[in-house]
Image (cartoon, rainbow, N blue to C red):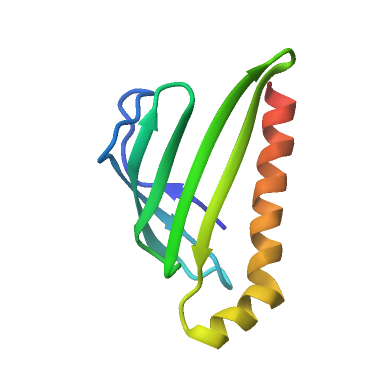
Length: 115
């Protein structure tokens, strides 16, 4: 999706109320602004980012981290809805769902390779 983080991150700490601005290119390379807010943080256990402005009608992304014998299991739970009613539903079935699966599969592969 061509994520470009615009917000300067001065340290590794996230906090409730933190706003993060991005450019994303969800369709056909068209660049759009996206802003998320960190709405919940449970230090080293989980956090939630919620879309304030962007391509989705709703985006609520819960990141969870579970220590285990092999390291840390990371689980994502995303509640999202596309705009434009039934047109959004058609877009979801034609390409949005596959694109999201690809993004999270890619992240899984990269994180597995790095860690």
